[in-house]
Image 1 (tube, rainbow, N blue to C red):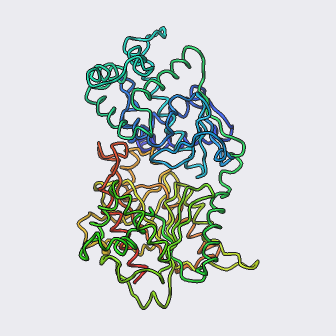
Image 2 (image 1 turned 30 degrees about the vertical axis):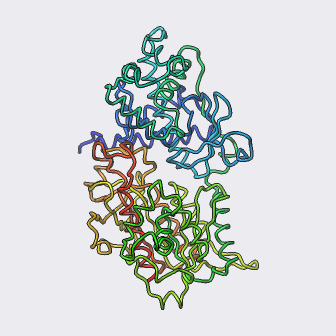
Image 3 (image 1 turned 180 degrees about the vertical axis):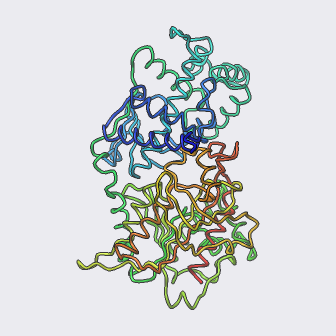
Length: 562
């Protein structure tokens, strides 16, 4: 018997150590990244070597793609803060502090002073673990910057002094001296001139959302240097209220109650309900765009052609028109006030402009007239939040002190996922979800199949999806094991098993839901973590995602309406 650990086993153990350490620091209420627990988290992350963090293990080079990825998901200015406090929804929304929302991960953050940042957590443990791994990556890169910017006695090297002059405004970057600045920076980063220049312009694409490459590198290196020479320790804390609330479904319950209240007020609660978890724009545009913008598009315009136009940054007016038309034609928009950051749209199909739907959406007018189904589209949840929200939404309505079951006929889930065979934009149709690192698995009969997408030129894969604990923990060895072993996995995502766990509990145990409920799952590939240059850190999916998004949306809507 071969007792040697494979790389996949080593990585799996590293993930377990990582989550044990993070759970420990969360329950204890505070930790220092340079302390015992912080070092334990860092060592486990380095052993795991996630694909998304690229060259994190290379102590000579700062990982630039990973730095851009993380900066998009953390609040602007966090690289300058020694103290980071995680809270639940504890009243900061009514304070005078500036609200900071990261561009690629909606969460409320507040800069308290020069040294402190507060981050609200309302999505459960998944969000906490996700942020902690990002912060650990940042602290690791900060040490590299410090070692390249200062000598062993802690004295600044010439390149660091030049960077300090730039950041403090003594030297203004212009066309004449920009290349000099890139040269100094490339030395501090251990990267080539071209790599440094490319990273600079990637950060400069969204200047309102980050402080730019020079300031971020300076902030990270400065904090690491002060901790190393002046014992100014960085510290991460978790408020008692947050620790009490995590796992208690407080936000999910309030969110679900708001939806049920709206259904009752509009007398929609006794009609057949179809729940969809997805982005909200594709379903709204699929149902309303052609009717709203009939003058802008020809009668023969395809849904994809309209979608590509509407998704352009210059189409703000189009989107306003669609929103207003939808409100006038049976659509209710619920903005989140509970703290979940999940917007909801309720479509009364009785009021839909059926004759003006895109030709890609099939419908049965007589059936719609008789049954009058209601479509509830909720924004896509994050990790463990998927269980909380669906579990609460499927609980019975309370009418005159009596419990009334929600008449849910179908639940559809459309999301982005990492693909293990194929490329960005391809489709994955699962027949089971498996929790990574556990024996938990959820096979189901998917009402969607490869056949539903036969007219598309996109690649379609069917099989098992792995629900991972965090996208930042993608590891090539573990993923190759899932792909090539008897699991025959086709992709990975963060919510599927949580959704199906809630659905099966409602149908088979709590009896809140008919066991005949129809379930549909479809994912499009946002990345391929097994291909170099195709990870999430390599850049945005961009318009590549429009085609699969609207294709899946039209198929799900056709299933519901016909």
